[in-house]
Image 1 (cartoon, rainbow, N blue to C red):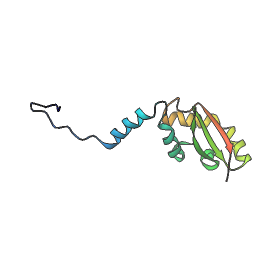
Image 2: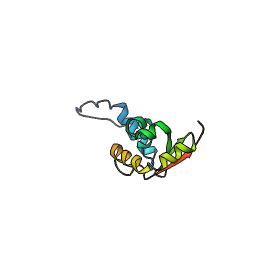
Image 3: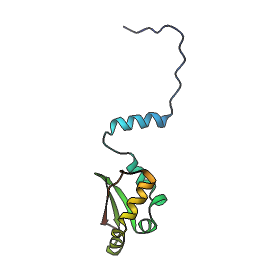
Image 4: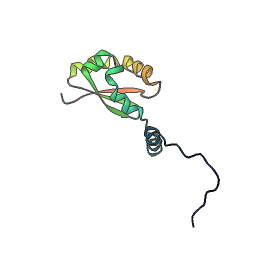
Length: 108
């Protein structure tokens, strides 16, 4: 059985695709912060110079940002500057997106 609609109604306006996709992603990814992907994509725009030069963000897990560096000297330098990176992240994205940083030596 089909429902019948009576009366004059305004036709529905199409929604922006970004709004529709955003809603779908939010519902499908409960507990996942989509800003984490943006953090990786915008790295060069907000990260302090040494972090951009020596580090490459890999991703975020359990509010911990994983940054990969090519050698031990770069890792040592960046470990002393974790507070500066966290401050830059908070200023760019708001507080709470990342609460810790792990520096890992990876492939060059």
